[in-house]
Amino acid sequence: MSVPSTFDHSATGYSLAHAYWLAKTSALAYQDKAAIEQQSRAWGFDEVRHHETRFRPPFPLQDTQSYTAASEHMIITAFRGTEPVQIKDWLSDATTPPRSGPGGTGYVHHGFAAALESIYPEVKDAVATCRTNGQTVWFTGHSLGGALAMLAGARMYLEEPRLAADGVYTYGQPRTCDRLLAAAYNKGYKNRMYRFVNNNDIVPQMPPESAYTHVSALRYIDSRGKLHETMPLLGSLTDRAKGLTADALAPASDGVRDHFVDAYVTALEKNLA
Image 1 (cartoon, rainbow, N blue to C red):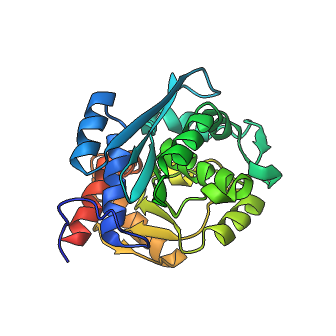
Image 2 (image 1 turned 90 degrees about the horizontal axis):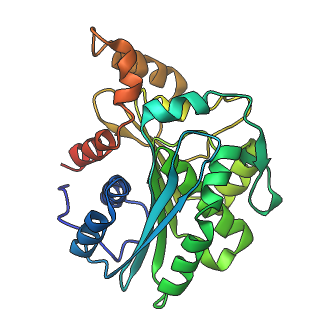
């Protein structure tokens, strides 16, 4: 297998190449509007729409951003994340009250729901109006962006099924919802949701598991950078210990270092090569 030179706009199911390119679109969400438009068009997406709202959510962000890129055969909405030093404090705050989930199913982290709500009408409108040719629709994001991608997928599936995404790929996504919503999501997005976790990435380990949980379809990147479709609990604990000891001078930094979006892109590229 080799690294493809660009997007396969005809992709319909899971592939490592598609995961790699969606990780790159997630990384692109951190760039400015001009860079997003230039790169998206270089990848074959003729139309690009930006979604941005400035507000003060219950965590230290100045705004919520995403973009939708559309071609003749594919539509991708990528949600921007945030840096681990900004995200870890409010994710570990167990006092944040939950909020009712999409379609009244279960509950979600209040911060995630508020952040998505601020741009969701624009995202929904972009998907609906750009989908003029029966294009496949994909949601993706890294870090906080992964939580927003997952929730956007849940809202469309549970509230407006005609707009349900063909796939959702997230990278370093935190726990986002309770078990009731996760169960509904796993049913609706079976074989369409893929959650990538890079070794000791600290963000997928938060918020506390007693209150929140993950959706299924884990794709685990071990301490050597190898991608696994399954990882038994004992094996993952052993592998995470290896990751922690990889940097003898700063073992605690592994959870932050593993979270950066470039680490995901690099690992997926190596698995392709």
